[in-house]
Length: 469
Image (spheres, rainbow, N blue to C red):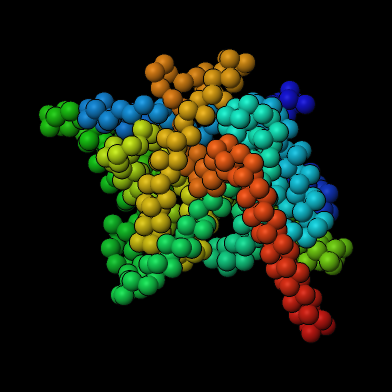
């Protein structure tokens, strides 16, 4: 089983997801040619997104590393990035079985009406495997690992249901889609609390500027494209040791600025491919559900947040937070993690935050700043346990991507900085049976609440259809 799923995961999202969506399209009645085109468009979207994020990391990474060397900013927790974190997650015993286990949990929750999300974002199941693997190695017990992964999966599905209507209302062409990715979902409670606190500040509502408002207020400076060029040039200049070197490196500095601007401009264009590919499948699924399963009205397809990371507010806030996060990592007392390779994953923090802040750039920036500040400490705290898992995977596979340099511990901003991952880990590992009892009680409580909300939603929808008839 481990070899089978390692092979499937090894295909990568660009191959695995088109196959899944093509098969799904055919199964729900879409013509083979149209289903194949939808699947291929999703695959092209993943390829394009990986190319653009690779451009970001390959261009920005050396410049930031140079800044680290010049100013002596080295910290002891080495940033391995999300590809290494995913490799560690999937190449453990928990990761080998995570897909069938989580799919079984999803089906059980659908049957008991404790979720209305069908999570087909199989590639991002590595997040559940990640927390399961870290708990497994920390506790030296595989069953604790599976317990942590399943709890994380259930809570993520519930949060996907809770945010689905608001998500679909905020983003265009997202009807029938929810986001069951725990890195995104883990920040929702924080975003709600921070947003309510900001609303209570007198006069703060006057600062309600969205991405379009920035363009009107600041002109060219409010464009993600121009901000990308500006931030890229500033980072390029900071990577020079003296004024004379800056003059010599003007072509490099301008080139870095153009590349950063290209990332900001290309991401929205690429994410439109996901929407184009998924829309026929989403529409056909809703029609099938309405026709065949009247008791299952309101089901949503769980998809990757890659669909919406091209929103202008996400781009602007992510770009501004990159230098701020590096500065915070250096000056915060007790933090030992310096994010470099993980910075491309920052875009994925905001897909479920924007519907809460209604795209307000300042609110979104404050939410991102607070959760990343806390997240740096979470990564530092989990680093020793993540290192245990990475060292075991490296010993078994010899994968250089998960090899941690001598004298360092390993970490990643992706999911390790999530409040959900940190809370589940410590309740399971640190508090043992007391923490497990708390997790089980809270999870069952939220499942009951979610079931009540689903049944109420279905009654309202059915009543509305009857009135129309």
